[in-house]
Image (tube, rainbow, N blue to C red; front, side):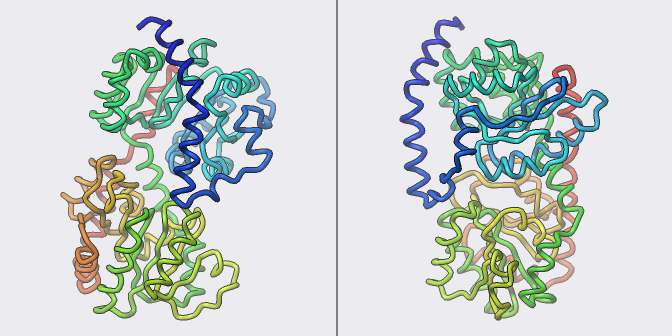
Length: 436
């Protein structure tokens, strides 16, 4: 492809960027997530590429970019391994969300964590010139055209970890391949999640010599996270006086799923009145919306933030509403099952292997396009069950609650399946070694 086509595309892309940003803003507002858009002066400076950066002491600078908290956590094992290397680089991590940045700041091995600069020329150029990275490693599908173009123009080497391209995005990018080809061709090393992802990336212009299927590091992070008990979960269960009560988790739920979850809980509770529910919307800023639904459905609940601060007395409640970040994983271990969201609505699904790694049988809906391999593996092993309705969920909960043998069997199979997906971090590090 000619460089002229790339330049023409970038000109149109930059001109359209404000309109795209406005469209995203409207979508967030309509989705009830306007609270997540409120940013401080420091946040805005970081979006402009002017955030505060510590001195790197002459070390090689590695810039790692991930979209959000989930992607940041997925990269944690990768970062930890990098930090053990003899020539540890100065690692700056950027994310698109504040929650992701805040999580990145807690990861061992991260020297600086900021919000990513907006993908427009002044912001991107300012950040590159201040950070002076030698290598830029992107996570999953963070293909920002101006950022990639500036990296190529300034000689910054490019890598991709946990690389993926879903079918819808692939069709759109394939149609624009004449304009996108040079961006994908700029990657020196690409670690793809699956063979299907590798084939799509190859078709979009990634060089075969630098492409390898390495798996998903998110599964390593999920397995390692399951190895320790979460003190916050234990304290919350104690304050709620839920010790000894059977509970199940509905994790990372999306609009349209919470109502089905509440209905399923009512059906299952008809057989086991002592059953308790831990309900965690994917985006904590939706807590008010989900609270209103719980009130409308007359299901007694307590919010985790209030339970933890002792503002809410531990009254008899049927549901714990998770309204913050970082506590969910601790509830998988003691749960009889976990439903994973974005699967009963057509959004492709979230991480199934985090609860599975904790030995928690997994429930998920029919929409698993972005998590197809772990969904199939869990279903085949018996560690996971595909459900399509509130009635399906209640029936599976009933089986797990009534049979200790079935519960133990499903738990062991879930953990074994999660363990089988581990090892992606070492494969990724090995493949990216010439770049790093």
